[in-house]
Length: 323
Image (cartoon, rainbow, N blue to C red; front, side):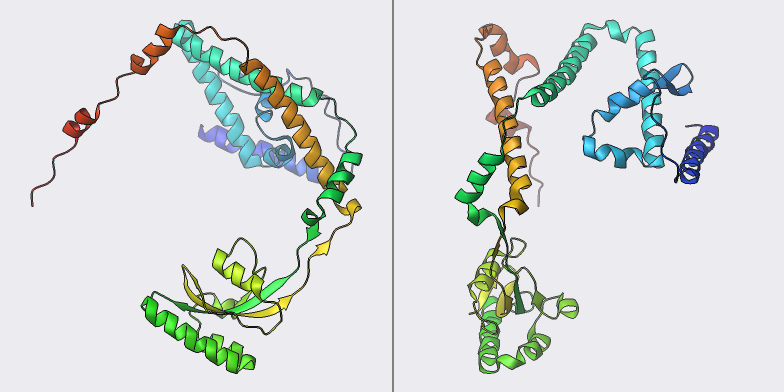
């Protein structure tokens, strides 16, 4: 990008942003610009709104507002589109668009785009039933899925295996566990004295959502097994070392009412229904009778070079260095 364009383009975007701020209290103007409206020119390359619209189709719909709200992203997008168009024009002038191999790649790219558009249309055209009744049936049949997880908070003491041998770490953890069982009111002091968890300075040994998947499985399992606040676990081993765990807080799972999860269930059913419709259509296409040229298929194994045999691979391997 030329130095002049580097200056002009950001200024143009800035002026647009300033105008939008000044007019923030007024209703936004309707977007009535035709698709062939020119957005920017450079040399012989022209980018129109239809080009931008085509690019926008590659972005998930809910992410488009955030993408196009960034002046830096807009500048990069337009710069890339201009460069790509100019390169394409140069390629056409050089006759590359007449090259059979290039034409074949263009056909594949066209097939890919049209195929994706066809799948989008199939999804949009699926006739959907009323999922409300099915949602209630799913809710009643799987109430265990629709709960607000209870809270599970623990404190732990970690004896690591970096500063100690495994046997030393285990023995020390057992010693700490006995002290904790004898004096449960001193668990916080034991954390400060013994725990080698690097996060101790910030959390003082407290672990929230202790039964969750973000913890080592053995740690989560041992934490979930504790029932009464103040209860102390046996020594637990993870890849980090040996843990002594004390239950701080535990609340029961709370069943969610149907109305609270109805939309969630309906969306799951709708998505599954549409996915099945698309899969059925794809299966129909894939299951059509296929006429294959056996010789041509077999030739593909060697068409792009022959893979070396194990003996050839060994002979091509570098010789071991002499000691």
